[in-house]
Image 1 (tube, rainbow, N blue to C red):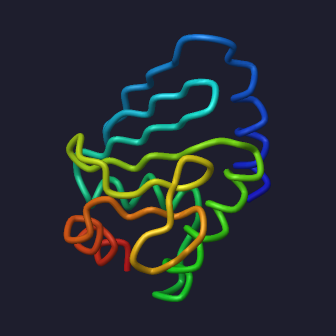
Image 2 (spheres, rainbow, N blue to C red; image 1 turned 180 degrees about the vertical axis):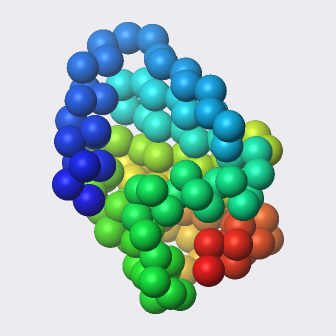
Length: 121
């Protein structure tokens, strides 16, 4: 989480506009307060997300969004996870709690999110 924290602090250097990075797995768009990750393939997306946080099981997969959401919210930043340009998860400052009642975590498309979640296990 230290590397991610440093990355979020460096993101504050963006004053206006955005930076879009094309990856094999999808796109990463950075603006001053928002990070948008658009994944095109779940299997390749797993590789990208595991680089951020290796998971050991279901417990890690369920707890990590809560921890990341709290970190992002404290820095007033929002992470939007998209799958084929459809929002499935919002973490941090711009999230409104949903069905699970987790603070700083909003699940937009539950069915697609669950399919994506099971590919991470």
